[in-house]
Amino acid sequence: MELRFDMQYEDAYREVYEMVKPRYKLFTAGPVACFPEVLAIMSVQMFSHRSAEAKAVHVDTLERLKKFLEADSGEIILFPSSGTGFMESAVRNAVPRGGKVLVTIIGAFGKRFADVVEANGRKAVIFEKEPGQAVKPEELDEALRKNPDVHAVTITYNETSTGVLNPLPELAKVVHEHDKLLFVDAVSAMGGADIKFDEWGIDLVFASSQKAFGVPPGLAVAAVSERVFEIAEKMPERGWYFDLPLYRKFNEKKKGTPSTPPLPQIFGLNVVLRIIEKMGGKEAWLDMYRKRSEIIREGVKEMGLGILAEPGYESPTITAVVVPEGMKGIDVYNAMRERGFELAKGYGSVAEKTFRIGNMGYMTFDDIREMLDNLREVIEKLKA
Ligand SMILES: *Cc1c(COP(=O)(O)O)cnc(C)c1O
Image 1 (cartoon, rainbow, N blue to C red):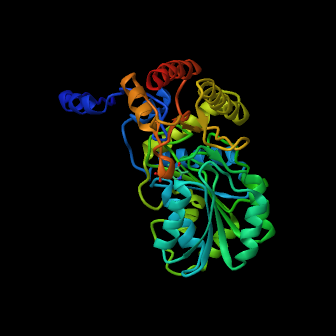
Image 2: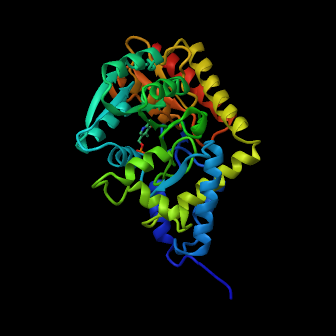
Image 3: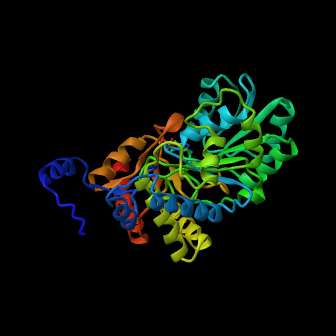
């Protein structure tokens, strides 16, 4: 038997293609450009998510993620949602209604975690830093001494709005000394910054497919500790769609996910995890991210622009650039778009005086140099 899938309505495809076709080289905050190998696997014909083939890919993806996140002691969970689904899930499964969560905020995505805590009837105790600053271990220690009754601490590993990487291993140590649960938003970190789930003792760390993995949006990934499952199993009204013990049960029976997952995204993620292996493994891959971000930071500094992140805490996946007095971040963004480069606008409270350059997903070092050459000209023109 031969399977054929001929396009009979190619004009329908063409009409939409005109709306969505690639127009820019992407240096975005997500969604980001994807490897062609990822896009190719995502266009295969669909089949049942309950088939043996789909289940095999699911199990293989879990195993590869477990290795990548060094999470032998954890359960890998895939949600048919964006990363924010895991904020909701962490709160509903592991914090009792009315219970307190210490939410550390260094930018817009820390604020979102506080909103999710409150929207689910839990109390957010806020510890907030100025944009560009990271949370320091001694500050977290002090905040926890003042608030001994919190159930959990949330940390944004990589704050996408400010381009700051929090010192997660050191912060995790402090959280353990106070014997609290640790929830980590690693949405723009996972795949671009190291995560050692077992060694650092994380309880729940999550990300979205469309950031540093370079896969289209629609899939969320997390590693979850045994401690969370013990609490969750006794948690009343933890919901169904994001019920962690239910997902674990499906994993254990090699049944996939409780509801239909975005199969193409899972295939795409599996391809990326294999590309990482073929590149020489996690160290080589993370090194590539480090180099990309270093080249970008060096380049913008040479142009006389500022970096919002305090020295020593710069993100390996995104750079928030501070423009000189009298210039607006949005003007740089617009001028770069005219030249065919999509950067990211400033975000949150620093929106006006910054723009951002992401280095996630599919790009070459030549793309980065070409972008910097154009940026240099744009800045010179705006200064004149
Ligand atoms: C993008 C981002 C989010 C939101 O992710 P969604 O996939 O839109 O749910 C949350 N936190 C951080 C740090 C992000 O970069």
